[in-house]
Length: 225
Ligand SMILES: Nc1ncnc2c1ncn2[C@@H]1O[C@H](COP(=O)(O)OP(=O)(O)OP(=O)(O)O)[C@@H](O)[C@H]1O
Ligand SMILES: [Mg+2]
Image (cartoon, rainbow, N blue to C red):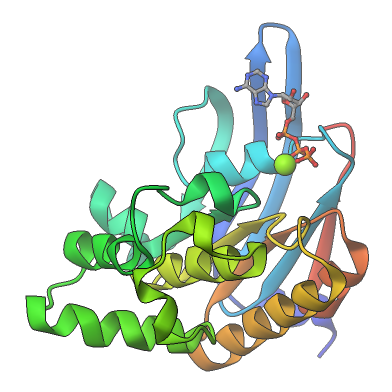
């Protein structure tokens, strides 16, 4: 079967039609944006700086941005806010600002477990250890704060925090852009493994075309919104 037919036979997890976003009246940042995200795929989203990629990411996770058009989510996304937040997770580029500077890695990873997962207090530590292992971080960093971590380690902690709630969809917005080539490669391989072993669906947003090509099954390009 041709790739297009292959996707036509499947129901999308997220279906976007005619999305239009205006931050200022009369000046749409996004217009006529339509695409589908299918279960298990990695969809690459590329486009020039300022073309609206991060805006799409924020709209998809339900940020309060005024928009028109339709976004349909699969039924397992749930109807309540908490269920939805668990279903879809966004990881952004700025892992250093995304992590609470006052919290240790343990505290950072414990928070989503407390909110979203019904596990006992004694299980927190084991679950945090499992999460660190899944992003290939040593459990020795558990008591460190963000200032005591490298850029790549912070990015891994941010990925582990997103994984803590066991999401179905992961949106990665420029998460490898601030890393050196070696660390970038490691994070990309990690994402590839997560996709294979956890069956995650990815929307992978990046300027870095080789990175997008490495991970993605399909690539869409945003041009002037
Ligand atoms: N909250 C906001 N209020 C007003 N304008 C905004 C806001 N957020 C983004 N913009 C504008 O919307 C446009 C798209 O921004 P966005 O961050 O979505 O682009 P991007 O494609 O992610 O860019 P980059 O590749 O640099 O990350 C830009 O012109 C930006 O200045
Ligand atoms: Mg952006």
